[in-house]
Image 1 (cartoon, each protein chain N blue to C red):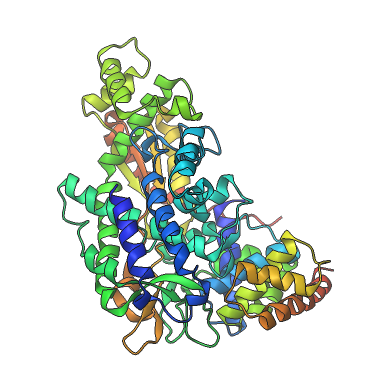
Image 2 (tube, rainbow over the protein chains, first blue to last red; image 1 turned 180 degrees about the horizontal axis):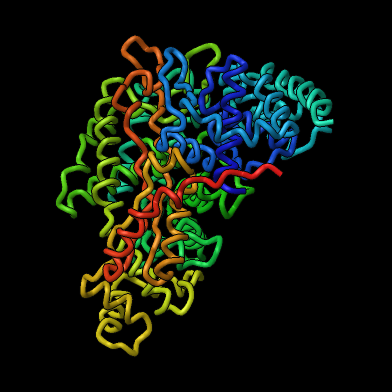
Length: 180
Length: 382
């Protein structure tokens, strides 16, 4: 996938997150793209590994730094939360290709709507639950999967881990209707 | 050895009982295990760059087979029979797998060992060595390179920085995650700012200097010819090549037109390096994200591939967002507390250089055609 197309997807995701009232930190962009990839098979060619707050792509992080360097997005301090990412003016032309691809944009919009207003703790447990489902199996009992999640992220409580899998299953069910 | 020394110092500071934040204590190993992990961190720091090729990074991307880099060579060396024996027979023994993971870190290890996962604890320890924000590898090379290059850009108060490092929950907000990260006490924020500035200036003024990059290119071109392929990747052959072998071959090739790589070696030795012609810039990027590609392609079409070279380094994650422990015990993002950190750009470049013989013509060509080359072609409606 070309870098300009990756840029289109990233900028569109940021626009969709903002439209859903998100403060749009890097974690929002990271987890939205990860979930789009896992639930819809949206190709962005960013490779995700388990790292900060769950699945994380160093390539995506570097891509975001490139967009900052080129003045296409900028970092805004928003105490008491972490920094948010803002689109610069006049970048809509750069994500027009994604916006006009309705099949792709409605998938990105759906995940952005689900994650946009979540805090980092929620994004972390949901994305890590998707990671555990993908690495192991959705057929394992929720309790077992919750233990696997906690082994990866010991600061997540048992209750939060269990509810993450239930919420992810609900999102996955709804995503099938969006994909259809 | 400098990295090993600093890694031990950081470990002692962040693990000191007075410095452990109560929210992350449950995620730490017991005190009886800390001695073991201290040894692992120091050994990992000592070994983390042993896989470097001659002249470190200069030749790495083009002179190793696809999928190889110095981290993978480091991984193989740490796992070689000789080194595993050393680790396992030391008293008390050290698990070489731990050393390899902590030395390389999750980012690079995932490139060639995607199934290896890191615990939160292992991730933290690898951050001490290779982390973007406070990795001691970076602290060590900035100070050392500045000293040897005779520039002051790389200097900062690393003693103050190290003494104020802490392992902190990422956030103390309800919606935030309490995942532990390497952060800092508020009193060390100025030292962290100074390090970030030092890093930015060292990259801009030393590592990314266009003349230095030109010599990397000529060295690479010479090595491609001299090696007739790639550097070997098996550990025994890899260890046969040092800077000395390469320097001797370079000087010999510069003197003898019949030797492989003569043209490139001569450029290197006689200081006839390529000159800077065009650099990626925000104004052209706003017109076309592929501006450098298109300018490079046009120059190659006009003047030939042998006379034009491209060298680039994309903006890397600046990782300036880390938790800061304030005097009132609250935890805040560094970005919210430091206008300096907000504003330090990522150092990056995308550079086109050319043979000095065509410099005047190529400059005129660009002046006349740059705008036309980078203006995107409008799609014609079908």
